Image (tube, rainbow, N blue to C red; front, side):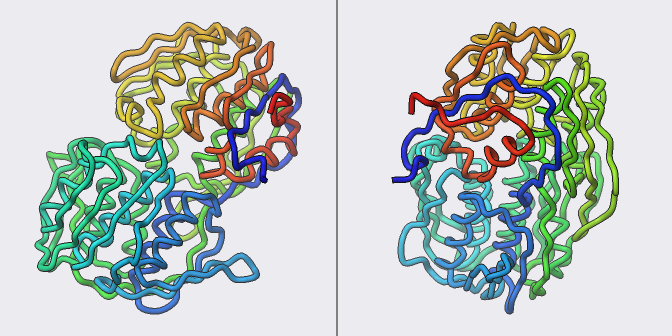
Length: 450
């Protein structure tokens, strides 16, 4: 039996001089969308650099369930032979989305305006996450949605037989909700319009344009409106997936807090709707430089050079939250090693991620001797300086990959080791995390108690 088939404690210990080049896996958000949009074309889409984590592999299998052909060639390129907009067939069995909130919400949108029925399942963590934010607008298209109270997974969607386009203002900043509506709008006649009051990651809009959809973006007094012409014939693409900035955050932040570190993290996506963490780190005084800036597949990318830094606490503006929502756990770790306090506001979305990330981080940091304040929509970290965090805990990760990686990175700079209760969730988004970090010099091992 693989060690990863059962709960796998892992321990990280104080390290020095992280050095080398960190090759980050492909961007998870773009990987999901590449597979789904490729399945909605007629013909073959080629995807290079796809993230081969469990979340994305679950989406690939789901596209096969909807009738597309998906295969990985011997050179690592993924090939998707699509069925066209509105061409999905009815799955023969329930679709297991594992741990992926992005995957399930985007897939719901992609099939909700086609007259087929699909049932979506998830693991324990995903089954606790709210789906009404997606099912409410999908019902406006004419879809029927049946699930557990909440509604939560398992959830069945009966696609609209005669879909109608909608105009919808997203009530909370969420790229998943926006994207689900746009994907549903592809098979609706006329124009679908989504308005968001706060900007969220715009990969779906960029990729829809690349695939040939007619999409316009308008700034207005209510925020930003995205207007999509329905029923296009999407054009197959050759996609090169940039490397994931959310995954890059972990080696980047480790280098900032581990004494003597100097690493290069090449080819990282710097989409403005995703780069809030790097902007914040620079405001804290991080030695973080962008090198070799260029563009790939319509996305800005750069190599990051990161060196150990003496950091100061900052106040992160709430309007920046959407551009770094997945990075607050590792930012909380960095803030623990800064001088002064770091204030994070506008982060209530963290309460409904894979875990309640505000509470999970507050618990673990407090056990490490870091003073933390929290409210429904904010967290304050009172930094203890570059060598002032004790550690010496076993941390509960709540089946959350980002909580697991954040505390493993923290243990590289604490006075005493940090153990996490289960490493397995990391495999959903960053399958080579341990290997990559160890190659840089991190003292990171499966716990001997396992």
